[in-house]
Amino acid sequence: MNSSHLGKFAVLNNRIKQLPQGINNYAVLIFAGDNGVSLENFSSYPPLTSRDIVIGHLKGKSPTAALLNRLGKQEIIVDVGLCHKVNDDKILQRNIARGSKNFLYNDALEKAQVEKSLEVGLSAWEDVAAEKFDIIGVGEIGIGNTLCAAGLAAIITGLELEYLVGSGSASDKVINRKIDILSRAIDLRSPDPNDVIDLLARFGGMELAALTGFILAAVKNKKIIMLDGYVTAVAALLASRINSRVPSFLIAPSTTGEPGHGPVLEQLGLKPVFDFALNYGEGLVAAIAMFLAEVLFSIEN
Image (cartoon, rainbow, N blue to C red; front, side, top):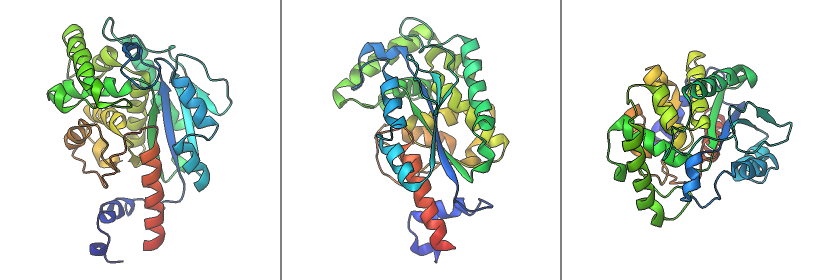
Protein backbone atom coordinates (compact mmCIF):
# COMPACT_ATOMS: atom_id res chain seq x y z
CA MET A 1 0.00 0.00 0.00
CA ASN A 2 1.29 3.46 -0.90
CA SER A 3 2.31 5.23 2.31
CA SER A 4 0.52 8.37 1.13
CA HIS A 5 -2.74 6.44 1.51
CA LEU A 6 -2.08 5.50 5.12
CA GLY A 7 -2.71 8.86 6.77
CA LYS A 8 -1.53 8.82 10.37
CA PHE A 9 -0.92 5.10 10.09
CA ALA A 10 2.13 5.98 7.95
CA VAL A 11 4.01 7.10 11.06
CA LEU A 12 3.26 3.81 12.78
CA ASN A 13 4.11 1.90 9.61
CA ASN A 14 7.54 3.51 9.40
CA ARG A 15 8.31 2.48 12.95
CA ILE A 16 7.18 -1.13 12.70
CA LYS A 17 9.29 -1.54 9.58
CA GLN A 18 12.23 -1.33 11.99
CA LEU A 19 11.12 -4.56 13.68
CA PRO A 20 13.13 -7.43 12.16
CA GLN A 21 10.44 -10.04 12.86
CA GLY A 22 7.45 -7.82 12.18
CA ILE A 23 4.87 -7.63 14.96
CA ASN A 24 3.17 -10.84 16.00
CA ASN A 25 4.25 -11.45 19.56
CA TYR A 26 3.71 -8.58 21.98
CA ALA A 27 2.68 -7.97 25.59
CA VAL A 28 1.90 -5.18 28.02
CA LEU A 29 4.03 -4.92 31.14
CA ILE A 30 2.44 -2.99 34.01
CA PHE A 31 4.15 -1.83 37.19
CA ALA A 32 1.85 -1.22 40.15
CA GLY A 33 2.31 0.82 43.31
CA ASP A 34 0.56 3.18 45.71
CA ASN A 35 1.39 6.82 46.31
CA GLY A 36 1.09 8.49 49.69
CA VAL A 37 0.06 11.80 48.18
CA SER A 38 -3.26 10.16 47.22
CA LEU A 39 -4.21 10.72 50.88
CA GLU A 40 -4.88 14.32 49.82
CA ASN A 41 -8.07 12.97 48.19
CA PHE A 42 -7.83 14.53 44.73
CA SER A 43 -8.51 11.30 42.83
CA SER A 44 -11.83 9.68 41.97
CA TYR A 45 -10.41 6.52 43.58
CA PRO A 46 -10.02 6.08 47.36
CA PRO A 47 -6.39 6.55 48.45
CA LEU A 48 -4.02 3.59 48.64
CA THR A 49 -6.43 1.18 46.95
CA SER A 50 -4.52 0.42 43.75
CA ARG A 51 -4.75 -3.23 44.81
CA ASP A 52 -8.42 -3.24 43.79
CA ILE A 53 -7.54 -2.04 40.28
CA VAL A 54 -4.87 -4.74 39.99
CA ILE A 55 -7.37 -7.41 41.01
CA GLY A 56 -9.73 -6.19 38.29
CA HIS A 57 -6.96 -6.67 35.74
CA LEU A 58 -6.10 -10.14 37.02
CA LYS A 59 -9.76 -11.15 36.76
CA GLY A 60 -9.88 -9.91 33.17
CA LYS A 61 -12.38 -7.17 34.00
CA SER A 62 -10.30 -4.13 33.04
CA PRO A 63 -10.44 -2.80 29.46
CA THR A 64 -6.73 -3.58 29.01
CA ALA A 65 -7.04 -7.16 30.21
CA ALA A 66 -10.24 -7.72 28.23
CA LEU A 67 -8.63 -6.52 25.00
CA LEU A 68 -5.43 -8.52 25.48
CA ASN A 69 -7.39 -11.64 26.38
CA ARG A 70 -9.45 -11.21 23.23
CA LEU A 71 -6.26 -10.90 21.20
CA GLY A 72 -4.56 -13.82 22.94
CA LYS A 73 -1.77 -11.54 24.17
CA GLN A 74 -0.16 -11.36 27.59
CA GLU A 75 -0.57 -8.77 30.34
CA ILE A 76 2.14 -8.95 32.99
CA ILE A 77 1.70 -7.07 36.27
CA VAL A 78 4.55 -6.39 38.69
CA ASP A 79 3.86 -5.30 42.28
CA VAL A 80 6.67 -2.90 43.03
CA GLY A 81 4.94 -0.73 45.64
CA LEU A 82 1.35 -1.71 46.38
CA CYS A 83 0.09 -0.79 49.83
CA HIS A 84 -1.80 -4.08 50.11
CA LYS A 85 -0.48 -7.40 48.82
CA VAL A 86 -2.33 -9.20 46.04
CA ASN A 87 -2.25 -12.94 46.63
CA ASP A 88 -2.29 -14.23 43.09
CA ASP A 89 0.24 -16.37 41.25
CA LYS A 90 -0.26 -14.28 38.11
CA ILE A 91 1.40 -11.20 39.63
CA LEU A 92 5.16 -10.80 39.96
CA GLN A 93 5.89 -10.03 43.62
CA ARG A 94 8.71 -7.46 43.69
CA ASN A 95 7.39 -5.13 46.39
CA ILE A 96 9.91 -2.60 47.71
CA ALA A 97 7.61 -0.91 50.24
CA ARG A 98 3.90 -0.76 51.04
CA GLY A 99 3.31 2.52 49.24
CA SER A 100 5.31 5.73 49.10
CA LYS A 101 5.07 8.59 51.58
CA ASN A 102 3.00 11.73 51.06
CA PHE A 103 5.42 14.15 49.40
CA LEU A 104 3.64 17.13 50.95
CA TYR A 105 5.22 16.14 54.27
CA ASN A 106 8.16 13.86 53.44
CA ASP A 107 10.19 12.76 50.49
CA ALA A 108 8.09 10.13 48.73
CA LEU A 109 10.89 7.57 48.80
CA GLU A 110 14.29 6.97 50.29
CA LYS A 111 17.04 7.03 47.68
CA ALA A 112 17.74 3.36 48.41
CA GLN A 113 14.10 2.61 47.57
CA VAL A 114 14.44 4.48 44.29
CA GLU A 115 17.52 2.46 43.40
CA LYS A 116 15.76 -0.80 44.28
CA SER A 117 12.72 0.21 42.22
CA LEU A 118 14.93 1.01 39.24
CA GLU A 119 16.55 -2.40 39.68
CA VAL A 120 13.11 -4.07 39.70
CA GLY A 121 12.51 -2.49 36.31
CA LEU A 122 15.92 -3.47 34.97
CA SER A 123 15.54 -7.04 36.26
CA ALA A 124 12.03 -7.33 34.83
CA TRP A 125 13.65 -7.70 31.42
CA GLU A 126 14.88 -11.15 32.43
CA ASP A 127 11.91 -11.88 34.71
CA VAL A 128 9.43 -11.70 31.83
CA ALA A 129 11.80 -13.06 29.15
CA ALA A 130 11.27 -9.80 27.28
CA GLU A 131 13.61 -10.75 24.46
CA LYS A 132 10.96 -13.10 23.01
CA PHE A 133 8.56 -10.24 22.26
CA ASP A 134 8.70 -8.28 19.00
CA ILE A 135 7.62 -5.13 20.84
CA ILE A 136 6.55 -4.43 24.42
CA GLY A 137 3.96 -1.99 25.70
CA VAL A 138 4.36 -0.44 29.13
CA GLY A 139 1.76 0.78 31.59
CA GLU A 140 1.18 1.54 35.25
CA ILE A 141 -1.36 1.22 38.01
CA GLY A 142 -0.98 3.66 40.88
CA ILE A 143 -3.56 6.01 42.36
CA GLY A 144 -2.05 9.48 42.51
CA ASN A 145 0.81 8.82 40.12
CA THR A 146 -0.45 11.32 37.53
CA LEU A 147 0.25 14.02 40.11
CA CYS A 148 3.69 12.54 40.79
CA ALA A 149 4.36 12.61 37.04
CA ALA A 150 3.23 16.23 36.73
CA GLY A 151 5.58 17.26 39.55
CA LEU A 152 8.50 15.51 37.87
CA ALA A 153 7.60 17.04 34.51
CA ALA A 154 7.50 20.52 36.04
CA ILE A 155 11.00 20.18 37.43
CA ILE A 156 12.51 18.65 34.29
CA THR A 157 10.85 20.93 31.72
CA GLY A 158 10.77 24.12 33.77
CA LEU A 159 7.20 24.77 32.63
CA GLU A 160 4.56 26.29 34.87
CA LEU A 161 2.27 23.82 36.62
CA GLU A 162 -0.77 25.26 34.85
CA TYR A 163 0.55 23.76 31.61
CA LEU A 164 1.23 20.33 33.10
CA VAL A 165 -1.56 19.48 35.54
CA GLY A 166 -4.83 17.94 34.42
CA SER A 167 -7.76 16.29 36.12
CA GLY A 168 -6.39 12.73 35.99
CA SER A 169 -9.12 10.30 37.00
CA ALA A 170 -11.18 13.05 38.68
CA SER A 171 -13.10 16.08 37.39
CA ASP A 172 -11.69 19.42 36.24
CA LYS A 173 -12.74 20.90 39.60
CA VAL A 174 -9.69 19.36 41.28
CA ILE A 175 -7.09 20.95 38.98
CA ASN A 176 -6.52 24.04 41.15
CA ARG A 177 -6.19 21.83 44.22
CA LYS A 178 -3.63 19.64 42.48
CA ILE A 179 -1.65 22.69 41.37
CA ASP A 180 -1.65 23.95 44.96
CA ILE A 181 -0.41 20.58 46.27
CA LEU A 182 2.42 20.45 43.74
CA SER A 183 3.38 24.09 44.19
CA ARG A 184 3.80 23.59 47.93
CA ALA A 185 5.59 20.28 47.47
CA ILE A 186 8.11 21.68 44.99
CA ASP A 187 8.95 24.51 47.41
CA LEU A 188 9.31 22.06 50.30
CA ARG A 189 11.23 19.30 48.50
CA SER A 190 13.69 21.45 46.48
CA PRO A 191 14.47 18.67 43.99
CA ASP A 192 17.63 18.63 41.85
CA PRO A 193 16.44 18.77 38.22
CA ASN A 194 19.63 17.10 37.00
CA ASP A 195 19.52 14.10 39.35
CA VAL A 196 17.03 11.37 38.39
CA ILE A 197 17.47 9.54 41.69
CA ASP A 198 16.79 12.72 43.65
CA LEU A 199 13.74 13.57 41.54
CA LEU A 200 12.19 10.16 42.07
CA ALA A 201 12.97 10.26 45.78
CA ARG A 202 11.18 13.59 46.15
CA PHE A 203 8.01 12.66 44.24
CA GLY A 204 7.98 8.91 43.63
CA GLY A 205 6.50 6.61 42.91
CA MET A 206 7.98 3.14 42.86
CA GLU A 207 6.01 2.16 39.77
CA LEU A 208 7.36 5.22 37.96
CA ALA A 209 10.93 4.36 38.96
CA ALA A 210 10.49 0.74 37.87
CA LEU A 211 9.11 1.90 34.51
CA THR A 212 12.21 4.06 34.10
CA GLY A 213 14.42 1.06 34.81
CA PHE A 214 12.58 -1.20 32.38
CA ILE A 215 12.77 1.36 29.57
CA LEU A 216 16.53 1.56 30.14
CA ALA A 217 16.75 -2.24 29.95
CA ALA A 218 14.78 -2.27 26.70
CA VAL A 219 17.07 0.31 25.13
CA LYS A 220 20.13 -1.65 26.23
CA ASN A 221 18.65 -4.68 24.44
CA LYS A 222 17.56 -2.60 21.42
CA LYS A 223 13.87 -3.37 21.84
CA ILE A 224 11.12 -0.96 20.76
CA ILE A 225 8.80 0.17 23.56
CA MET A 226 5.20 1.27 23.00
CA LEU A 227 4.44 3.97 25.53
CA ASP A 228 1.00 4.38 27.07
CA GLY A 229 0.00 7.71 28.61
CA TYR A 230 1.38 10.63 30.60
CA VAL A 231 3.04 8.62 33.36
CA THR A 232 4.92 6.32 30.99
CA ALA A 233 6.05 9.37 28.98
CA VAL A 234 7.47 10.97 32.13
CA ALA A 235 9.24 7.70 32.99
CA ALA A 236 10.71 7.72 29.48
CA LEU A 237 11.82 11.33 29.94
CA LEU A 238 13.60 10.35 33.16
CA ALA A 239 15.22 7.40 31.38
CA SER A 240 16.40 9.73 28.61
CA ARG A 241 18.28 11.77 31.21
CA ILE A 242 20.29 8.63 31.96
CA ASN A 243 20.65 7.37 28.37
CA SER A 244 20.20 9.87 25.55
CA ARG A 245 19.43 7.03 23.09
CA VAL A 246 16.10 6.30 24.78
CA PRO A 247 13.78 8.32 22.46
CA SER A 248 14.89 6.41 19.35
CA PHE A 249 13.45 3.21 20.85
CA LEU A 250 10.05 4.67 21.75
CA ILE A 251 6.70 4.95 20.02
CA ALA A 252 4.22 7.46 21.42
CA PRO A 253 0.83 6.08 20.31
CA SER A 254 -1.40 8.97 21.33
CA THR A 255 -1.93 12.06 23.38
CA THR A 256 -4.12 11.98 26.47
CA GLY A 257 -6.33 14.56 28.10
CA GLU A 258 -3.45 15.53 30.39
CA PRO A 259 -2.06 18.93 29.31
CA GLY A 260 1.48 17.97 30.31
CA HIS A 261 1.62 14.95 28.03
CA GLY A 262 2.32 16.94 24.86
CA PRO A 263 5.18 19.01 26.32
CA VAL A 264 6.81 15.86 27.73
CA LEU A 265 6.64 14.15 24.32
CA GLU A 266 8.12 17.30 22.77
CA GLN A 267 11.03 17.08 25.22
CA LEU A 268 11.55 13.51 24.02
CA GLY A 269 11.34 14.58 20.38
CA LEU A 270 8.33 12.32 19.83
CA LYS A 271 5.16 12.97 17.88
CA PRO A 272 2.10 10.95 18.88
CA VAL A 273 0.71 8.75 16.12
CA PHE A 274 -2.93 9.37 17.03
CA ASP A 275 -4.99 11.72 19.18
CA PHE A 276 -7.27 9.39 21.10
CA ALA A 277 -7.38 11.78 24.10
CA LEU A 278 -7.92 8.68 26.25
CA ASN A 279 -7.36 9.61 29.88
CA TYR A 280 -7.07 6.09 31.16
CA GLY A 281 -3.57 4.69 31.63
CA GLU A 282 -3.17 1.09 32.79
CA GLY A 283 -1.60 0.08 29.47
CA LEU A 284 -4.81 0.46 27.45
CA VAL A 285 -3.53 2.81 24.73
CA ALA A 286 -0.32 0.77 24.43
CA ALA A 287 -2.41 -2.37 23.88
CA ILE A 288 -4.68 -0.69 21.31
CA ALA A 289 -1.71 0.74 19.42
CA MET A 290 0.14 -2.58 19.24
CA PHE A 291 -3.00 -4.26 17.94
CA LEU A 292 -3.34 -1.57 15.25
CA ALA A 293 0.34 -2.04 14.40
CA GLU A 294 -0.24 -5.79 14.07
CA VAL A 295 -3.17 -5.19 11.72
CA LEU A 296 -1.13 -2.72 9.69
CA PHE A 297 1.77 -5.15 9.42
CA SER A 298 -0.61 -7.85 8.17
CA ILE A 299 -2.01 -5.52 5.50
CA GLU A 300 1.44 -4.43 4.37
CA ASN A 301 2.80 -7.97 4.22
